Image 1 (cartoon, rainbow, N blue to C red):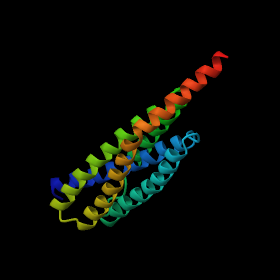
Image 2: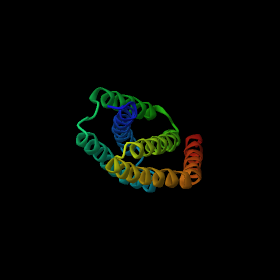
Image 3: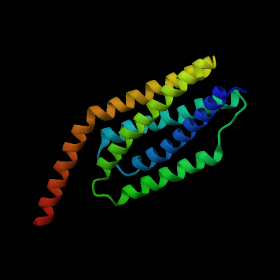
Length: 169
């Protein structure tokens, strides 16, 4: 097996672990943002996309007889769980979650861009197609988050001020 193919397979495994981590992270966020209905609905939709993305990558790994790397997947899920639990104690959890989500989307975008180039070099058109689909979904989520960061911030600040005023009374 060529070194470039080995790298492609490693990065494909990494991407699968990344999607497993994203699923855990999104599930944690979803359970705690009921007062932001638009954000909650978009995260719910992206959680479904994330599950499909992981499935696409698993199919690619299975097709080339490589499977996923379960230790890495488990480690990623554990890190995501710790991150989602730590947000419970932050008064500005929705803001920290928005920041983490926007950052994570860009890591995924970079990962898929790299994978597409590697799969193209190896002539793996099915992997290219799966990664291009995942990339489009990640770009759409990143753009959606970016377009709402100001609105989410304003809503958070308005609610925080109202909570502060009512606590003073």
